Length: 75
View 1: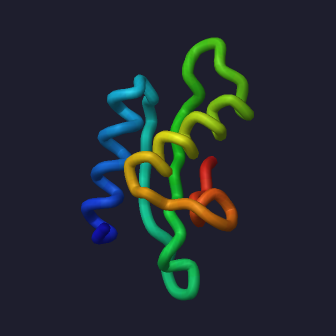
View 2: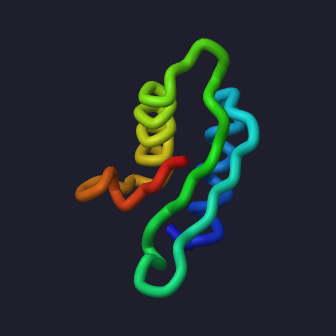
């Protein structure tokens, strides 16, 4: 999947799941393949639950898997 298409697809899926303050980008330089995701927790959701759910959504949309959750960084 192209970087721009991947970014838009993940952002759309997270917004559809109810997340707000969503920012999705790719790394630069040697971290170019990393996907960086920033969003707020849902009401009554712990930070750990947010990480797990956001990672799951991003992996489903992009098809990523492997080390470090498919090279997905969540903040």
